[in-house]
Length: 560
Ligand code: ARG
Picture 1 (cartoon, helix red, strand yellow):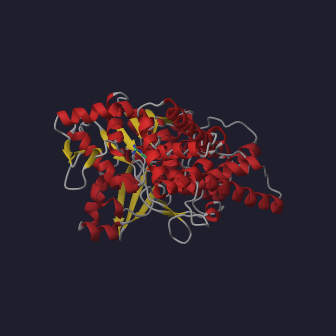
Picture 2: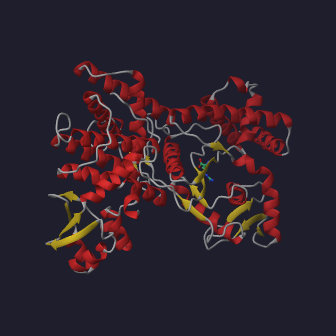
Picture 3: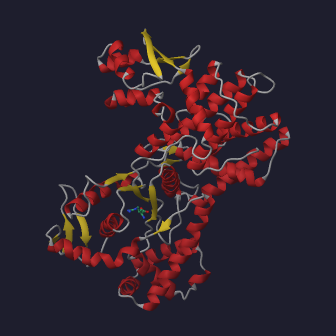
């Protein structure tokens, strides 16, 4: 049974298990040889780095394979020959194809209650390029964790509270503006203007501070204006989430307002927190203290996050807490968890916390991505650019080659290209935003992979008969290589769920497309004795590819 549901034929995972401390040394891929032998060239570098001879290396890796699945046959000048039983691959493919919804991916035996914090923009500010990463990495992680059977709660920890509202309300009152006529970009302009006046006009500053106090003490007029400002922002965020196929629950900073005062009081009583220069802090280590209350009595980002940590554990019952937030906040989260531990809120033996941090998006010039006028690039503009570029590219192609074109499909491709280019980059690394490259038909792009899936639709259409249950027969090495790759789908999903790195799924889908194209070049499908089995293999590639993309929150097409 185990060999049917989970094959250990993934050499990379076997290597990682055998040498957990040297995973970065793994290079290369299985290369299909003849019959059911696979070769792997990696040993010369390893023998040097690990100070083991190649037989010892082979021994260690051999232990990671189940004996009825594959076997290391020999090692010769750095080439490891692994024999894989094709029958085992076939058994797994049968199992996957019969399981049309889950494609052989089993539900987790120990599901977690996951609380994942992502996107989390600030009210009265537009989503910018930095939010692209958090939003789409978060959405795809949530989908994958859910698919594996975890109970996932998605949190949008929006910045909807703080002193900036005093300035905004003050300006809106001074200028007698009607908030219901404003959109988010007007609010952004107001915010800039208010900031300028706050810094230069003492009367405006004093009035703004008063408005903060009004808002905090529940003044009805201030509260109403604050709600309107939040609603304008919410509408704009929602439009982007719909475009990106993102679902998330708003539970912003203001949600915790009533919990802050009792929390700080309790921590003072327990002597976890101390008063220092009129402020209330928790000393976690030698670095900056965790600030619970400023000397002017105001609560901070830290206070809210500690209350949120408590809520996520205590009320939401999360046992795996994930924060998809840029790498710049890594120290904040380290301190938050230390403070949480000290306060008795977080028991690290029971609760797993992860900062799924990510690097920055850069422009072609290698600097932080900005618009031509030097401003931070807005997410809505990037989405627009991706769609427009896709329309232009695919229209041109349609005019030249008489290919199919419609605007809706071009928009889907534009969004797919944008999301994939981001997700395929290892989370921690920075990457360069290049709208021409991401729409290329060649290389590791969404367009290339989606095109391969479309090709499968047209093969099926051309053959024009239903996919049968004829047993898989893998004979050609290219066919075996494709089959072997398909069997690794469940391994890849669990790797993403463990490491919280969606790029492993992107790599898998890219390799799937590459292996499928090689197979299709070498192995004729229509009108051969293998037609039924090969049609079925194509069908399975299509299903795995489509599900894979769905888990990345990327739409697929039947035609392009
Ligand atoms: N609003 C914050 C920002 O834009 C991100 C919040 C992340 N989540 C959290 N629980 N701190 O930087």
